[in-house]
Amino acid sequence: MSLPFPRHKFGQKIGIVGIFYLFYQTITKKSFMNTSKILFSLFLVLSLLVSCEKDNNHSEDDELATRMNQFIQSNLSTFYLWYDEIPDIKPESEKDPKEYFKALLSSKDKWSLITDDVDEFLDEMEGTGETYGYGLAYGQFSNSKECFAVVQYVYPGSPAAEKLKRGDIIVKLNSQNLKEDDLNKLTKPGTLRLGLGKREGNAIGSTGQTVTITSRKMDTDPILITKLFELGNHKIGYLMYTLFSKTFNSSIAKAFNEFKEAGITDLVLDLRYNHGGDDEASTFLCSAIVPKEKAIEGTLLSKETWNTPCQKIFESDPQYDGLLNRFFVETNCNLDLPSKKIYILTTRETISASEYTIACLKAFMDVELVGTQTYGKYVTMYSFSPQYEENGKMVADEELANWLIFPVCSRFSNINGYPSSLEGMIPQHEVNEDLFNGIQLGDANEPLLAEALALISGTQRRQAKGRSIETAPAFNMLPKSFNDIKSNRIIHVK
Image (tube, rainbow, N blue to C red; front, side, top):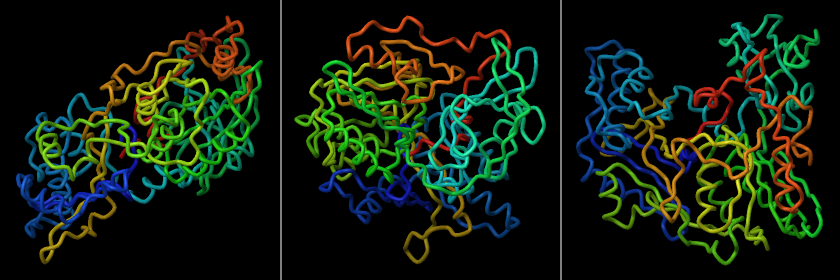
């Protein structure tokens, strides 16, 4: 979903020429959808699509661009959530498919994506791409165009972990002061020579120290931290989770089975930097957390709502049930918490699949949010790749094989109809994190975790909510846009 979900290998790949070739596997064994039936059904009901036949009157590049634009227009006009707001722009009028895609999007849409580098894109989504292995927050000095970055976390065994830790400040790149245009370079693969800084009072200055890191391809296990805390009669499991990727569902199972063996009574789930991921991972996580008597395989977990024409088609035929509903799955690691309650740590970087997970859990158990307001992404996205008809069959368009589009196609809600909102979710217990205090994630004194532990144990809540770094007079932290978050390695598609 965009909501949450990265799904390409088992997700939607839709071709064109009057037919949408839809591959879909639902999360229940009994609901696997027959591809040929879907092809035939969509041929009948979605015949409004236009052809992507080649036009030899154009140059090769122009012809490819037009063909891709036709593919974009046809997909959006059928499956896009705001299909009725698409402007009438001719495919041949724009030579850059990325610009054409953007031109068709609704003003409501902050999320739909397009890429012409599918392999790199999918590696990033699955947590197996080339990376430095860190998460960053960004800031700008007051009355200046110069910027800085602060390390939020590092993955164990990553290039960043060898030289950096949470709270380290980056003020220079290749001996030059950072400008706003340089910030995206800190996540692009390559070699970086980073100049470090230090906060003193309300100011940040250079220490003169430099470190060099080189990105590499690696599996970044999203189970960043697991810990146990014993407070009075409570044995508390803490898990920091940074990406919803089905590739690492086994890591969730391993961590939760260790929690079960330890006999935990309570769980703190840290989603503060989790930008989303795929539906199979979020479904798996929900199925492992919701009380065992409710998380029965095949029981309804959540719903999706499409645009009006698609919704009518999908509701009219049971074979499309997997496009409208999500169901619990068997995990063999259900925690079955005695408290029937979960504490989730959130920030503005708690997005998409994270918000979906929170919404789903709220329908089945008590959920206490600790931290700051979430991002507010309430929609799902599907991936579409170009295909064309050849000898009566749909085949991949090899000349456009590096392209994928990820338009918003539906809204999500839990079984009670509760969605995330555009404004995000507001925590019951507001606590600001402090990246500059030197306290590492998983430390019982880290402000968000400390608040959750205090709530569970019934001890006095922390009075200090963390320093408000956003109002420090010498600098300001920069809010991340969806594009900033995307460049941080994680895309939220289904």
